[in-house]
Image (cartoon, rainbow, N blue to C red; front, side, top):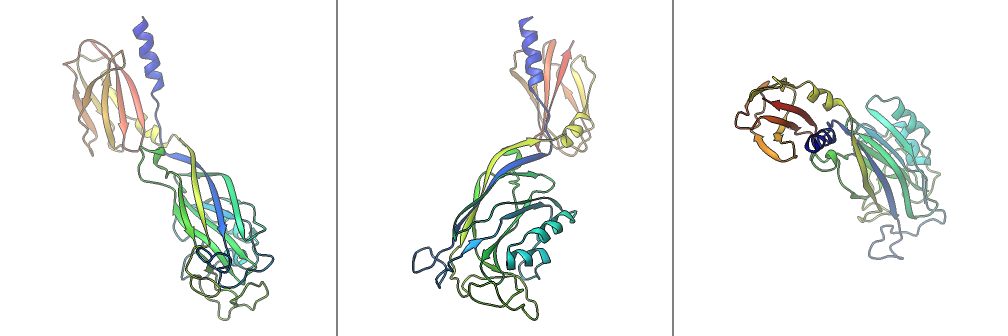
Length: 311
């Protein structure tokens, strides 16, 4: 009886997993500084204005690259608004009206040239794994920093359910191409004709050094039921069996492993996996009569456990 209880505990502890979501902390660190103050890391070749600051940091998650901005393309009204004035409402409307996007978060601004802005809980889904981030370098004509459609997926489902671990990107100044001017000021004429988004690196007043960094800190991830539904469609029969079973409905599943455990939780058989087949015929006649646990694992991280009785 003790062993049977252990079997049911072991059986229940195995679970199925599917597509995932993740939680990240996003931290922007500004190192905007005059070269006269910091010859090594400073990137501004002229003194900063007394009211140097950063607009609210806005972050959106979406499906497709270059959805909200692209180098060499005209700025959208939302990007123009952020780059020129720091206002985020037009950009938020663009995100909310775009079916390619999932969510948008407007964080704090920064009332100094140097410092950090953090968004403490960015939820990202596997269907919308790309992140775009924007903040105005203020006061300037139309200069800003941005992360354009960086993916938070790693491609390795065995670690963090396929999400990237903590990483940092360097940030450089961009020009939205919507206002003229080469100094730190807000009152500038509209560009005529309107230009495109370009790099501001090595163009007055910046040299080629980074103006800040953004760090995506991995906090946690969870899994949903899409792949659960697929793996739950798999049929295992007959059960009970005299030693031969068929595992069917595999055409939409990429199996990684099929394992058989005894009542004590010990691995007693590992079955060769074949990709691209709809069913597998498995011979278990070498196993003693009794109760076993058949475990299926998929490449994308799903598990299914099935009690199996051999008579």
